[in-house]
Image (cartoon, rainbow, N blue to C red; front, side, top):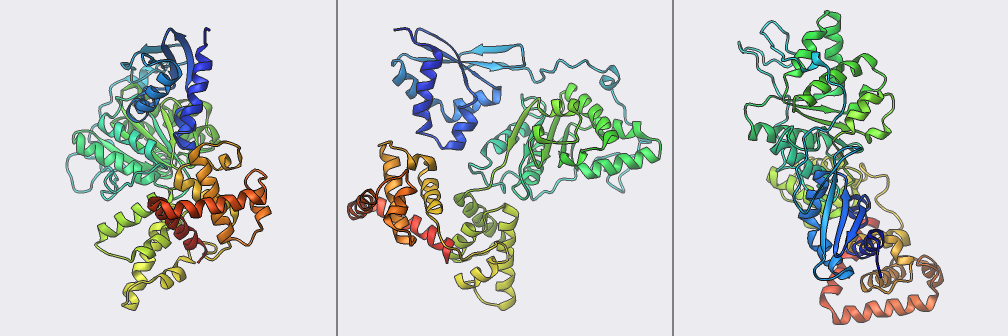
Length: 477
């Protein structure tokens, strides 16, 4: 029977979905398109060179085993990498993508070589130096070493590292990073800039908040020296512009930035941008600018999970040469979950309190201080919260708990969630069952007994249950 590429890939996705978390599946596998199947060779299309490289580095074993299971042991995978709307490049594990794929008409004026004489004013000049030298405006404390990696930021961090290793020479130019407040956009941008300076001391690197860029432009406009402003920015090798959403509805600023962007991009220079939302959701920005923002790689930073928050706190404490009881650190990491800035703020408050009172911080003191960072530390735990905690721990999709699947990992997560729901809530067995796809009370009883039996015979499982119970307890005490 002849099988289509779509059928084979659909079956592969079913297997892959059970072996990776939901966010990874949506990011790395859902965008893939099956192209063709010839004998035992499946060709798939991926959005970019970086996308291909990430699959090869992190998921090649899973892809190989899945494809061999679906076809046969000699199954092979080939890629087509999208270059632009009309072309793509094919290759079995070997591809070469040009650094720029824009078809925009080039502006000769913007491509002209720029010579900056000492007479041109430099908004970032270092005072006291005779030779014009640009102050990069970078914070030396924001580096990749101090930027903790987790599932929430792995793609953005990896892309930033690649850019720093080959500025202007990757397929993600510009690199656009977006997220909510306090999740590490600015830290990552500074880390990229600092790493570029370490790798390429001769390159000119400049970090500038968008509002500062606008204010500088206004100053130059008042002095009738806009060309000098443009020429200065066209000299930069790596331009990092923070919070581009503030360009909204500033038509003249957008027009100037458009020309600067074009020149840098066509000259092979690197551009890194940050925003509080994805480019497609930006309002008040000209379409010609938005289309350029989308030319490279756009990636987001999510809220860090519990393990990442713990790592951030431990890294911060190590850097500052301090120690706090482990249960205090766990409590802070579990309850201050909205963003990294508040997490570090809570830690600083704990340290200040300890210093002022000249006594060690215990859990009770931590609870009083953390109340300033969360709406309510004490709260009644819900069945949904227990489900989420268990699913996060075992890397299982929460909606799977309501399905009829008999896969061992999901069954175990479902039974444990029922067990914990019975122990931590006042809900009846019938109500608990309804939260798991309408199962009856006898199923809940069986699940609780199954968990108790497994805890008696499996030490590792017992430790896992204890760890999850501790997390739930931290959230309600």
